[in-house]
Length: 164
Length: 272
Image (cartoon, rainbow over all chains, first blue to last red; front, side, top):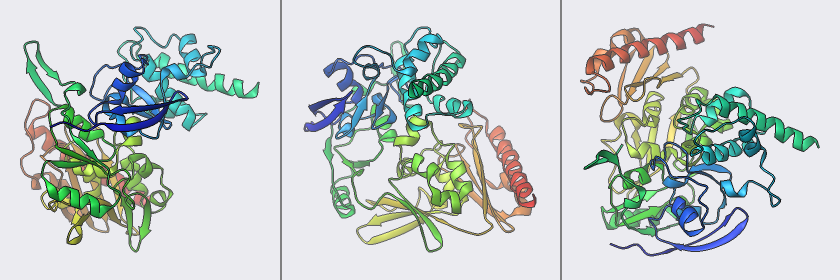
């Protein structure tokens, strides 16, 4: 059988997008293949590892396990949408750089989007809250400690930016 | 996990293998029931956590009904002596709801341990229950709390105790809500630290206990009896699964250990 196309209207990193998608088409394929936002990575393809994490109306979701039509009417943020127009990094990105919170880097876009989702939800999480939240994603290189420290640093950078 | 055999060995399937389907977006429960009655090749989707996993693994459907926009299936409220949780409530809604925090804090605390944050923010309680997966523990908690699933059918509303799921789920029905009784002194404790081998929830109301087991059988199974018999409750269950992940003997042993431990915890908290 063949599915009919579905019209999807959404905002991706602040830009309005209108697309016709097949019902079975996944959000990650729309982002990577149609919109050329290849920062979002496909890894386990099971919704387990979180490398494909993007923010859908502020919620971290696995874009490999989300049908594209489910994003209709939503505001989507990917790793490409974090730095500002002048190239200044988001505090989470900067903290990951400062703390060397990556090695191979394949999980990093998902980790950063997950952390961004946490700080949007709770600007001042304690360490246990960070560990619980970030436990959703998998990194096979770092042993996680530097990632947790980077999120703690991002909290401080965000507070500093607010106080400036 | 769904896998398939290739020359390279057993690997999981890609999402690009998901078969085409038609998408429907009804707005009312009666429209959903009408759509479900047309064909057994029709299913529903809300958060999509479980269905996408199954479809990636090879499940095919002619028609998928998106119920995320159906009115009246969200919200958590007290209705008489029960707390009613809409089937479209997400796990996140459950863990952050003030009504549950007031009336069913043990249930809320247990539910917080289900899934990671990506699953909890999108996945619905209804999806967890209707997936009827041995390792999805929503039904375990609900059964130990004495809760029920409420279905809409063409003949009206049908309530099914969680302890009778999935055997007594009506055909062509739509899960609309969960109902959990609010009993003054009832307590609930949950341990899924040994998931996916075994998970145990213990509910105690007065001198009666309900022990619900997940992961260990094809679907959650309950035992109810006097609290004083908790030490022997593990013997009351049928033969557990026996596979490389955990032997039947180990699983049965852990049912007894965790049930005892949770009961002691609840007793200690009641005495303090």
